[in-house]
Length: 203
Image 1 (cartoon, rainbow, N blue to C red):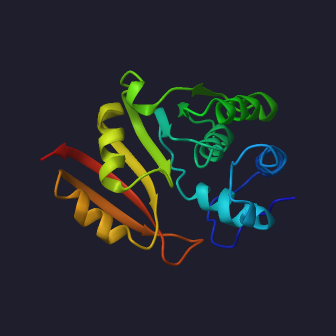
Image 2 (spheres, one colour):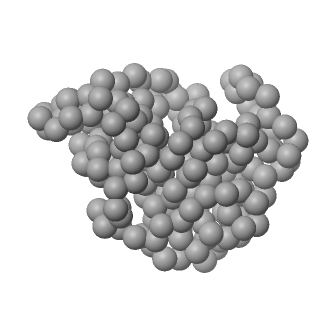
């Protein structure tokens, strides 16, 4: 059974841990057929993927759009925590790969977690007016802002996970965008951060 790491500050119910475990089992099963996560990380899905993705979760109401959701990281994990806390959050997971979209719909059904899967290219999806937009390992920050901006509500917040080159990505993005941001040190990777970005405007 999955257990909460020492750094996790909130309470995690047994039901939530059971859903996270069931989600890990689905990832492991489906990765035999399609590339949901790197096979080299299959022995550490709990820390490398599930709790890493859990860092993105925030108590946010309204619509939450997870772009390029892939295997559901962080979208499925955030939806599990939002459901556990009874939040009024509607998750939309955007994933153009039809096989991965099928996996995500399977997760929603088998885990009993409500979210919508949109199996289209991000650029082709009508504006979502989301209060929260998340993404993990999808694109450079400059490209992420281009993809996210049409789907972000006026007062919305972007939550992006970034690796060791995050400062360089911020500098590059600032050539084309104005935005304010907060960088939170990752709990699972000392070189990574969780970027919280708002007030996005194209230069």
